[in-house]
Length: 383
Ligand SMILES: Cc1cc2nc3c(=O)[nH]c(=O)nc-3n(C[C@H](O)[C@H](O)[C@H](O)COP(=O)(O)OP(=O)(O)OC[C@H]3O[C@@H](n4cnc5c(N)ncnc54)[C@H](O)[C@@H]3O)c2cc1C
Image 1: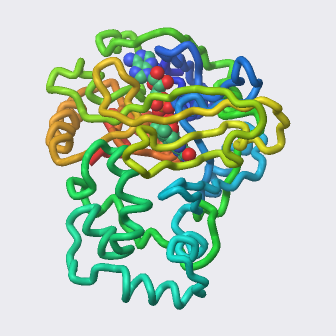
Image 2: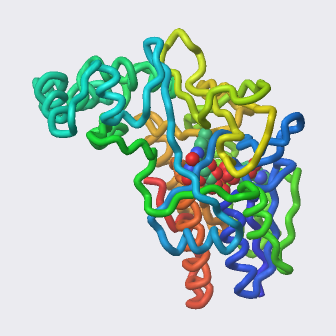
């Protein structure tokens, strides 16, 4: 039986810890915060009783049947489809941009084929043959009018730079639907845990061989006390940021309450740059099976993370990639630690991918133990 430490009580630490505990090992999970759940943490709002997604809205969606079975084994999931709206030029439109959005925007009644022909022949800028930037990609595929109404301002606020400075890869596919499907995600399995994500993660951590310690900041210098450490904190944080900091965007949430229903949907985006926030989340709409008179909403502001801020979205621009490579090289030369999760591998990971990777990491680790091999620094390389 080994003694293993998980740094971070988010999905990564919980899922890996549970797998190792079920395999007979003693697991300790520490988190600097005063709650488990990492960035998926949910809690009841003090005034309204609404279940709040404390670090931003989280909708579970996946095509991975094993992961779907896994989460359903630890929580009751209720059906939930994410239907996002956006306020632009004084009107409310449906997202992602679909036939309803297009017909409303251009004051038309086009059918799918007509809309597709209209966008590709009259809107898209076909003079751009090899788009290099986000802006060129958007102009090439959706044209200037839709780009400026629905993509440009939101992207500028979200990433803090002009879309001409972002790589085309961010906007990979044609971001338009030529039908009235306004379900934000394509995945087969979608839902919301009835009691919130923290209750689900508490269930994952509920095992006699798992000990959880909150309000406990772990420092890499203490690693020698453990047979192996799984680190779901920031990759550069393990090394004391001594080569510099990997860039992140952070979010500020401005909470306000409202009697009744504030906006009629869970997420309303605001693309205009004269409105400083990117979106407003009204949390009670994530749990339509509950009944609350009062409502709590978060205005969400995005900015560059400074030391001490919560890192949310990895930037992964050219400058970060060089620094990332330097940290990856050092991590690979370090023994006794495996870097996991969204911060440990400096990638944006949806929850289902986080769980998939955590299960694969735990299995990979046990396979290393079985053959007497040293566990690698990464089961999922950041680059
Ligand atoms: C705004 C936003 C919205 C999102 N929405 C969705 C969504 O709708 N659907 C979806 O599938 N996914 C969504 N995600 C992704 C989801 O949040 C991640 O998949 C998930 O949180 C990753 O879990 P993790 O355990 O790897 O990391 P985290 O949840 O970040 O957990 C890491 C934990 O490590 C702790 N820690 C770090 N360093 C130390 C240290 N030195 N000592 C002790 N503890 C430490 C931190 O306190 C933290 O609790 C969203 C992410 C963001 C940022």
